[in-house]
Length: 113
Length: 118
Image (cartoon, rainbow over all chains, first blue to last red; front, side):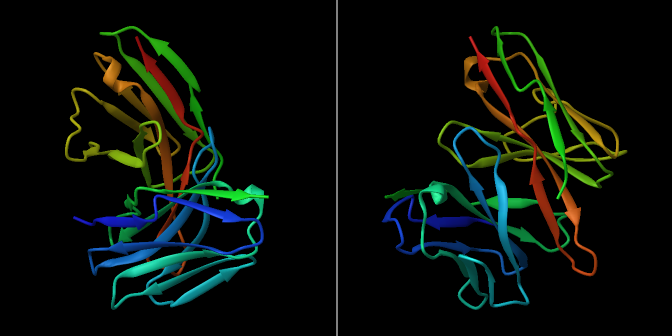
C-alpha cells in the first residue's frame, strides 16, 4: 500500500519567515495530494491540494509543489503569521480508491512573533 | 466543501461498554470514512463505509470491535465495542466529494468525538 513520509516533525519559524514541509510517497499510482491544517482541538481543514497533472499550485501565501519523478511534494508558507501555528498533515490518494487517503505523520509549526 | 456533524462531541465511558458515534453530512456522498487520532498523532483510517455494502476495514481493525453502519448517503455510525482504556482517542468521520471533471475526491472531516475510557 501507499506510504507517506513527512519531514520535519516540528518547525519553528520567526513571524514573516517562510516555512517548508516536505513529503514523499511510495506508490506511483497516487494522483492527488492534499494538505490539511489542524489547530489544537479542531478538525483537520483542507487548505490546498495538487493533482498529479500539475507541478505547482498557489493560493495567496501558501503553495504546493509536486515532483512526480522523485515522488515528493512540498508545502510552502510565505510571510508566516502567528495564526499559521498548527499541525500540518500531507496525504496521498491513489487513483480509483474513492478518495482514500494515506496521511503523513504531521508537522508541528510554531510561528513566534 | 460539506457540513459534517458528529454526535457525541465527547464522552467518558467505562471499560467493557460500547459507544456509538453518529456522523451526519448535509448532502449525499458516496464514500464516508472513519479515522482514529491518538493524542499528538496522525490520522489512522479505520474503515471505508459505502452505502449499501459492508464497510471495508484497514489492517488492524475488525468489524466485531468497530461495527459500522451506512444506512443512506448522508449518515453513518461507528460503534466502539467492549471498550478498554486503549480505545481512548479522537474518532473522526470524513466524506469524500468527487470533483467534477477530475478523477479525484476531496475529503472533509467532521469535528470529531473525543472518547475517554476509564
